[in-house]
Image (cartoon, one colour):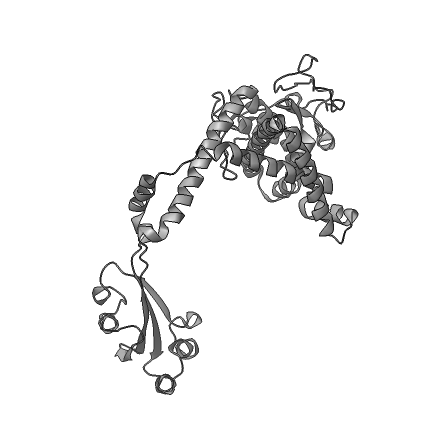
Length: 420
């Protein structure tokens, strides 16, 4: 059965629910919601028969160095745009590997976004998952992966442009020195060989030495910039620290836990009963005897952990009343037994009653750090939202179009190849 038309139908259904469906990839700011679209969480292969021409576009050549990418009309574009080229020929499985591989998907802050470059970091993962998952599962997986990656890309591009436009000449000279140091460090880790470093990075991360240097340079620039602009805006009042402690009191002062061990042997096995008795009297540890001779959880040395909902001496520790009563009378380090109940003989040892009580004084720094991290994320979100609005992407329509194009290209490149 030819599954290509059905899979193309799946792509159409899935792209209608593309925006707003992905979970967070990392601690980061979120893009504002896009223009409303018809939701479609379920993928139905029979719902729509999509004409192949709507999924195919002409490959777009990258613009010359230093020249702005053309917009839909051919004129230089100042804001992110999508070029919708008409197909030159219908989509077939044989053309999957060359269709749209170098398609210009759009622009982010004036920088062109090409499909081949976008998919390079996730190429192996998308290809492997297309072999492992059903088409419906893969479409949902790819939708989330693409959206999260595009969000990361937009965030980094906008922040990086903001950083670079604000650098002083002295700072630019410092960046050059920093980049040189980064490259030298990567090379030195590979016996001083740039070629060896390049091969290793390609094998382990799928990027070249120069790409790795650039990525780490950009990451450090963004991190330093955010720290600089936010460091005086994020404050954590002591009042909020105290309120968070009261709110999470149970987290810092959880219920006590009783740690016990138990040995159980059949009463009819008099030889084993005698062996347990002799081993304990000789000074062998309770845990070792339990691991060697007990029929109760020997792999853990007879371990029992019970969270207490009140005083230890009134806690429900063991289901059998005779054993529970004996365990309640123990103090840490004491052993009760042998106790014969039914067809078995038992020994019980109380290892400890573990109590964790952390006053506010002991956890104030931890709470302050948690609140500070939350405030930083909120401040980053506000700052990034302003950048996004200034970029022309704030409405979400352009982002939605880029997501849709990337999703369609991914389906052609990975899913149709796997299912064709």
